[in-house]
Length: 183
Image 1 (cartoon, rainbow, N blue to C red):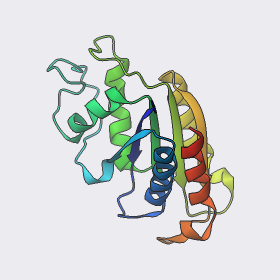
Image 2 (image 1 turned 60 degrees about the vertical axis):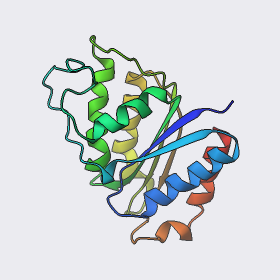
Image 3 (image 1 turned 120 degrees about the vertical axis):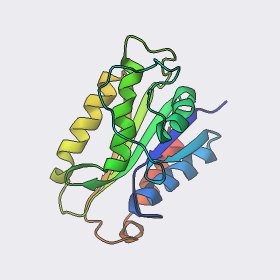
Image 4 (image 1 turned 90 degrees about the vertical axis):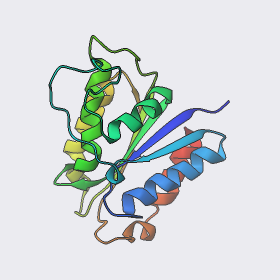
């Protein structure tokens, strides 16, 4: 039986470069019999964490009902989580950051349904030259994975992706698909 994989995308641009990376990963993972669910965070209305301290008070992870409510059962089913985002000012997009911040509910002492996620992956692409542009976002992702007790099983960071579709001019989609196959 394959893994239950949740891919959360954060690109506000439909069929953008990071979404193409996510789709290539999904293709590879599905070819090995894994069940993959894609959650497009940019197509949902998800407010950021308000640090209100009312997690689980209404029976759901977040007491504010928004698009995160739809994500909760997907998170709770997943063995593996994949974040796919464009790089915006040296970090993940705000569209993916909002649901990430709400993961705090699953670490609270009041957590009613702990996550069974054991491993994580980051897929990211950005418009500048050099890998140093990813230093901050990779450090943040790795710290998050460590904090949530997820094994980081891979980071695919692709620089010099300026325009929509530029990702197809690289081997990034092949690399992402290979990551999906090897998961």
